[in-house]
Image 1: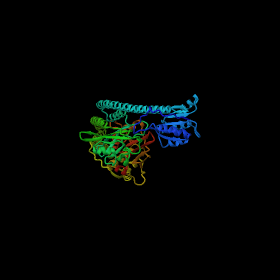
Image 2: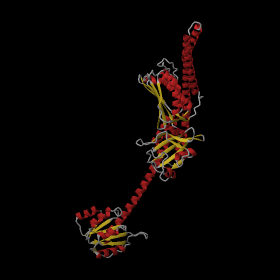
Image 3: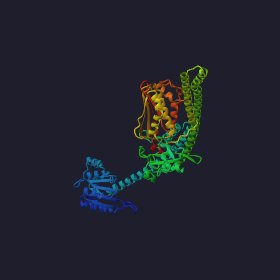
Image 4: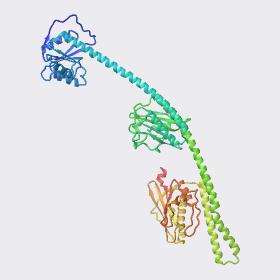
Length: 587
């Protein structure tokens, strides 16, 4: 019911020409709809009508009125439920709803407000009251909207201030980090320790995802990861990871090769990443990378490596970041060069110390080990001269054999000393080539068979088929012969000696084993040390120089292998060494 009083001509509602509010009137009474619509149209409102809650909800799927006048008592869903559905819809929840009803009880009004209504007009409706309430709530809505806009602007200003403060804090942190790096580079001289500390400081201060430092190898054909610092729970790339400088579509190789910085603001759209993925390959778990900056490490104009900085944020590096990080990269390059120079000096010092120890050892061997054989030579030769006129042929023969044995021992010692001296001075050439280890073992067995037979020792070559290694033929021949001679020396009558070999991954393992007297574990390492003189007599009182295994160790290491001994007293000895296989060495 509407009280259709004449319009008060003194009341006006001002709207701009470009904006006339739209009102959705929901009422099942056509007469009420018509009268109220005509009245509000006269005041410049645009009117939409719906005769049920369902009809109103369907219209709201396509329109967005400025305010809704809602009758409560309607067929189907009533006004309260219709309002609840309007407020539950994200698209329509902010539209003001004014209820129009004859239900005037307080409980009905409370129910209307709980349903989401902003006002409650009781019937019969007074036109002026409806107009006043509509215009009032439209003004409230406009004020609310403007307040929201101001709040949003205030939030934007606050965010801008926060960003500015964050940038200022970031710059202060960068300067602090630069100062810390400067302190570290002057206080740490160990290269490995320096690199680990630098990556830790940069990542912890700047909160980057991963920091890696790569250095070029001496050939300048490969760049090698020296250290990396990233999330502790991930399987990070291991130091030693190597890349060829001409690797295509690889950021690390590209910067190492060109010496120019590379910035990837978004690795997911970066053409290099799309072509080849992460420069660290697929074996690591650096899956959260979003942007990456790779900077060259230069000394003068020479690139010595790269600093790799990764972030889990898109567009993580602005121009100021790049400038500061380039400054850090320059400091790091200088620190690396200083540490390398210090390390080189340390290595020279250690080498000189080692050479002095070797020299002392050399003179000790010459003075100690040569004295014994020469005393035998001098003693027996003097005795021979004194008794040659009265001694029997058998006595002379025995003294001649003793003199020959002393001369042979002296010659073998001098030969070992000469070879060892050549290796120490870098004068013994090492020319690796493909060698047939089966043939070398056969040659050794053939050469030393008489020595073994003389002591009633069985000597075998147990290498099956042909096995090849990649090493200097002369050196490996010398090693096998030396090890077999040692085995004969320390094996008793009736014992056995065998030479065997087998392929193991990228190396060939050669074993010379015997059933001899063995040696205690506490003395095994002494046999391979130049600064410890350790030698014993053989089972037939054969003399030794103590240089044989040292010489073997030097030769095997020259050929990129290793040598070791396994032995138990009374159970025999097995001396084992490795050399590369041909295919692995060529790679």
